[in-house]
Length: 79
Image 1: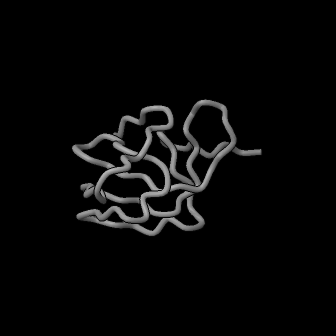
Image 2: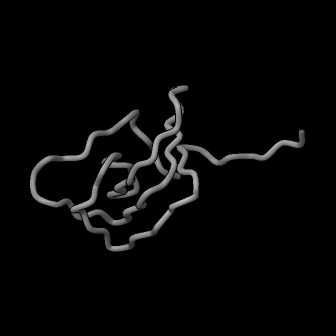
């Protein structure tokens, strides 16, 4: 499981390198705020940055366009 800090900010320095880089997902951050499109950088099993990480790289990179990223599993319930 990943721990997600509320709205972690990307670093402004040199391009970051993450263990996992999730690109262009619809992020639901658990605060009640509207979902937003962003990249998510994971380092050491924790979310290290959320935002436009366009210059960053990841050991593993996944394109999540059209998918939702959240801090907990989503359990579908019948209507």
